[in-house]
Image (cartoon, rainbow, N blue to C red; front, top):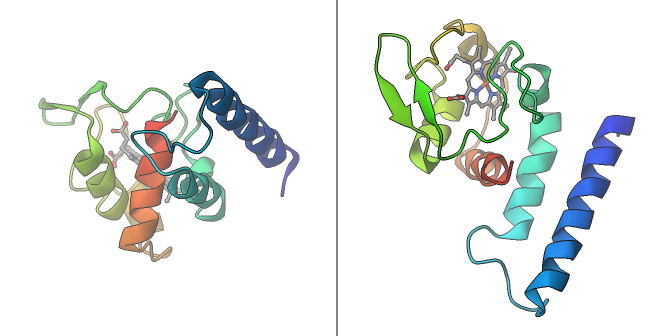
Length: 133
Ligand code: HEC
């Protein structure tokens, strides 16, 4: 694991334990996402190379940053806009060219993703992780 990945992991663990404290009852899972799924997605972000093109700190890279994308309104090429929900995220992961974000190039992620063989479950995990950012 690279230094950065360790830092991100530690930060993530801190947030998880902190929210456990704030919640008061550590036995109760968070209402939305299973922590296991989020942790799996966080790992996949590195192992499936997403971070080569997507940051989690808001800085655009080859692709848009994942920070705050969930629930935001994204402009698509062609002039449409869309409110980012789980279905859109999942589609964007499995079929990157189905909808292309305005200002970014079509085909870059599509060509890459075909080599990664992302399963349905892995896509769900990545969506769960992106939702936390
Ligand atoms: C080779 C570069 C590259 C890699 C690797 C890559 N992407 Fe992308 N991604 C892009 C580009 C460019 C776009 C914007 C164009 C588009 O919408 O297809 C994008 C768009 C997206 C979007 C839509 C974002 C938005 O703001 O609406 C999601 C979600 C996404 N990628 C998830 C992933 C995940 C998850 C992975 C890892 C499995 C990944 N990407 C790997 C380049 C990449």
